[in-house]
Image 1 (cartoon, helix red, strand yellow):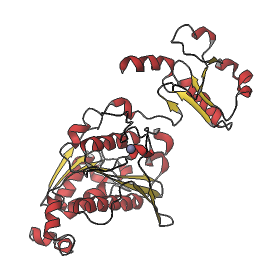
Image 2: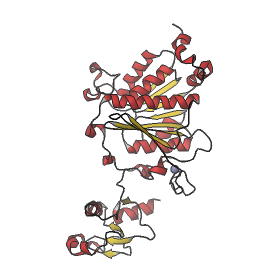
Image 3: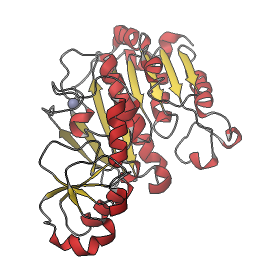
Image 4: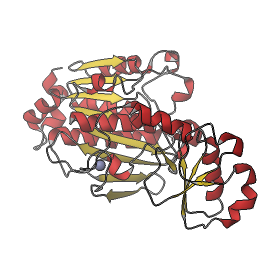
Length: 358
Ligand SMILES: [Zn+2]
């Protein structure tokens, strides 16, 4: 069999042709995560003839992966996922180059991992990595295709950053990295493999479309798929005027660890200049030890005496020394219909540290 035969069913498509095949061959793709999404993405990129595919994953194969990570089998339990997937894809298509990296991606190595890529496939299962990949793709002007799963649903997002004048980014929708437990990993939420397979296949197709310039642009669009009703939805969004990454008011100028810490939506890093009533919930004996900020003092131990005097529509920012008690308190107040309560994430201690660092 020849290479020409291998791709003949796609090169006869008018919009692909031999020139499209060359575009695929000249593309370097990075797949982050050799899990339920990474398998179909890898299989279809390899099948299409994407010239160089790097698979990144530091995890080892476990038996509980088998229901969705369909390239693995039982005899491979304990082996590195990225290496085994590389072997499988190399067997599938001998005409392309496949690499594996057994690394955990973080703010220090992400640029090195992505700098040679033309297109990045985010097949990971946590927000921290998702945002890290996204922001790096944004700074390096690389195309990015994301997918995520939750039980019987999933979504795909495309960011065409290699193209000049791309407006809007993930942080227009989510300015901060959400807390991990706000959706749950598939270990906690459960997943049928075919859901990962469906979304991973869409993700691969979205990437192939980008490489070949086929179809409509999906920039600033979230495509959601419900595998129980088979309903799909396209949600379009605009660039956020105060986006922390892509607007003229951007506060994120480079890849730094602190931008990838997961947080609750009610946690703030700093005390905003106005619009909040600041309430210090530390006890009397703590007051002299740490920085003092103009605020109302309402010790947590006397909570029952003062909570009924608060206004449920007012904006409150609660502070303590480390942000643990204030976070707990805000969670409690939210169950009592308080609408606008916030907590200073690392407390007053963290604030001083935060200021001296930056
Ligand atoms: Zn943005």
